[in-house]
Image 1 (cartoon, helix red, strand yellow):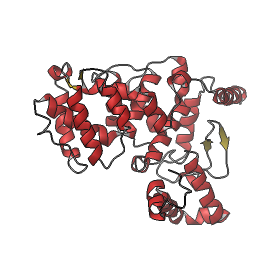
Image 2 (spheres, rainbow, N blue to C red):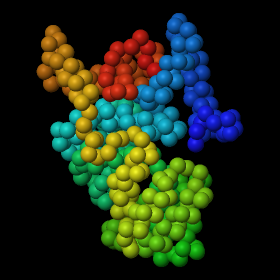
Image 3 (cartoon, helix red, strand yellow):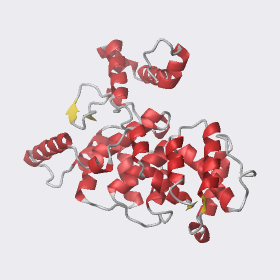
Image 4 (tube, rainbow, N blue to C red):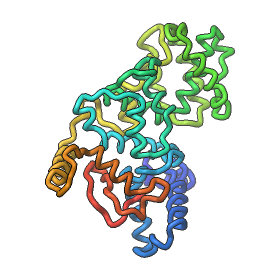
Length: 332
């Protein structure tokens, strides 16, 4: 849809772009810290705020509720995470669930363990107790889980019903109001060892998923991609289905946060900036020879309280091109 088309009603444009959400947040932040922001003018403040939203930098150090509030915020958080910690993938390190959570908490201090565990179950086929994961495996699974969490929770409820032997006519397609209560039961059942080996009929699951898409109020992958994955095999497990979705390039392109797997670790501009940063650290008096990009992020975190808005903190900002440069005021 062309948002500049005169055929699009103003109300629909505002709803689709979620401008009112960001405007409300910008005003709230301004009122909370008006003495600091009014020093350099309201026009500049709003310009920098919406520039940061456009460049995906606005989610840095924000609370989880804000990051999850819109699909743009979720995709922006995925992109920031990739740009900050891509070097882990280049080094070939395998990390555990607690280690990935620690990295995520550098960007979002209240990021929950459960969200990381959910992503790891996709990578490790539900055996997420103590497994190690590569950066590339984790980030694509995390992207799927984080961007479509509510929809995937509903699919899990449907899957458990089919696994229990219910016919498609009696399977309850969850609504947004009921899924939170049902998913906890489905999660407990999915942990049973005997169910890990089971699978359901792909065509039957496809019918139920299609009905879910008709009713869902949450974001979900394209129905074409969902059908394409389910048509590849006669039987499918829940986590096998999610693994295929996580690796589906069309879904990745639709979200728009990450490059393809072939290009995930390739970023010449970022490499140049990191080399400059490391060189600066190595020649600084009293610098720690073990300094790294991650260490730099930790230092930023220590200097900037996550409970305060990042507009009024002088910090190193992660720009949209992956570089770090000091600004007079960081965007929110």
